[in-house]
Image 1 (cartoon, each protein chain N blue to C red):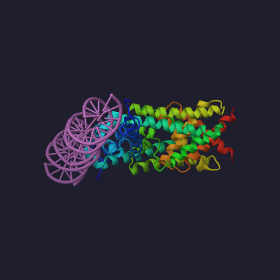
Image 2: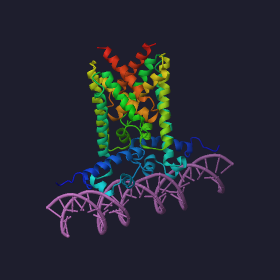
Image 3: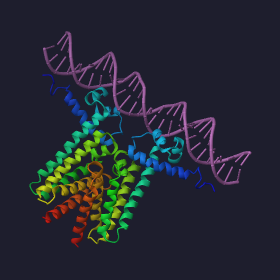
Image 4: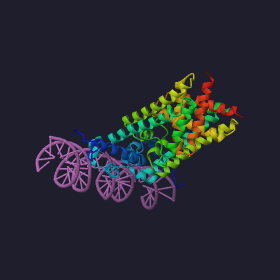
Length: 196
Length: 196
DNA sequence: CATAGATCGAACCGATCGGTACGAACCTGA
DNA sequence: TCAGGTTCGTACCGATCGGTTCGATCTATG
């Protein structure tokens, strides 16, 4: 067995641990707000270890954004699925799940979009675009489930509500942002359903 | 006359010129994406001049964000006012004005929110919050003009659509983002008006 | 023409940046 | 016990960072 699983020295485990801790720290401080030296100290790894696993600081950033995008999108999709078959209930569940994220004290907006807003590296911007794709797919699916005339159009409107709620929660007032967006989303859903 | 107006050497004019050029460059490259030395070269001013007018790089950043927030918000308010007395027309004009911004090749999202997303300085975050306040005030005013039951509630929903449209235009697909958001906004407006 | 202020260009500062190198300590599988 | 890989801690590298200083140059005013 080339890779000792569960042992003290396990590259995969080390990599995952770095990724997890770096996710917190980079989100809290901003991608350019902390240097590699301090980052290593906070993560509990040496520079050599970090650079062997991720190559460059950008490599670490991209790896953590990819993993985070997947986790966040999956959590949202699961919340929708757990709400049952009614599209209105699914939509409400999505915005309630979002509000739970807004309520976390460390919430500072979407990590992927924050990164794309500052980091002009193409790979980072692609991760953010892909992240919005995942959201759009989920919301368009709910629109289709509701049987509206133009599911992609409603999905895109709902995507804007999701992103707008996140922006407002991050930079203006987080209290009730999810509820406000949820009401708007349900209004758009019933208006689209009424036109069939 | 202590200040030579219109002359070659005019501190106020120098300051304004630095601010205008720095606005472009900092938006294009990102606040941390360019150093003061290169920034001065692009701006066409010496370091000493820049530091005398703005004290620090952060000082320059804050000054240009304040000025830009005011200009953008005023442009939007003027677009709404020029659309006449009908709240629906005003709302449509707002989103059409937004789409015009999205169509600019250099468009990269809201400068104030981008700055707040990366720069953890409290002053920058305050400028972004104030910027959202201006938007909210405009949109709540339109909602009140429409005579809906709860103008602040509708205003907040519309604010989310504005911000969501900007995010989607910047990071996903700018074509038609304004139109999509405009349709959603008009739907929310008529739904709120119908409940009176 | 002389003075005062504005600007320039370049040198310079200490600090920090991302990234590399290396010896020592440490597992783990053979 | 030995060999190979992983990790650590630290020293180190050149480059760049934000910011300061200073002499030279220019302009407007008196």
